[in-house]
Image 1 (spheres, rainbow, N blue to C red):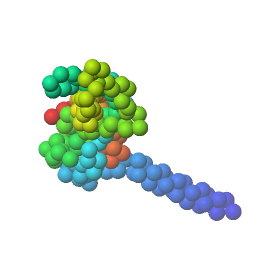
Image 2 (image 1 turned 180 degrees about the horizontal axis):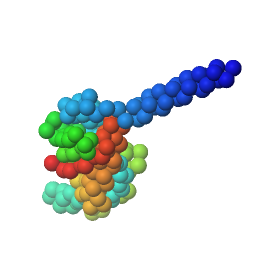
Image 3 (image 1 turned 45 degrees about the vertical axis):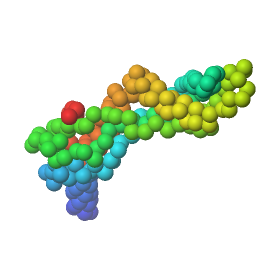
Length: 193
């Protein structure tokens, strides 16, 4: 009976060791099977990595002079979302260095603003006036479009002034670092190209 328990204990011990080894191997896959092109493909699959979104509101005023006299003024409140991140599609195998110690080095492209999307529900004309002593002057339907274009440039500059590119870069680095560590990197050093 004692021999049976000893054999059962030994078998259970071997099973536990093999199970633990399997768990450890799953946590840290062998990096030797990954090369720079494979890692580039994994990173490029993220494509345009939008890593931050700012919501910016701006008030834009335009004045248009009418011929022969008078003017039209427009005051527009614009709200937009500014999306920024890193375009990973431009990475090449030369962008990733994989030394034997698994301390991977990646050169990322700089962060940039991808899109500025005006929220039409939150954008409105606050005030529109035509010179009172020129009632024959008609409103210009294109003035609001011009104000939106001016607002887009103003919103982009406001987002840049608030540091959207620095935040986008930091967030993208975190995502890339986590992805590569999941693939088995011991540590990841990121730099800008």
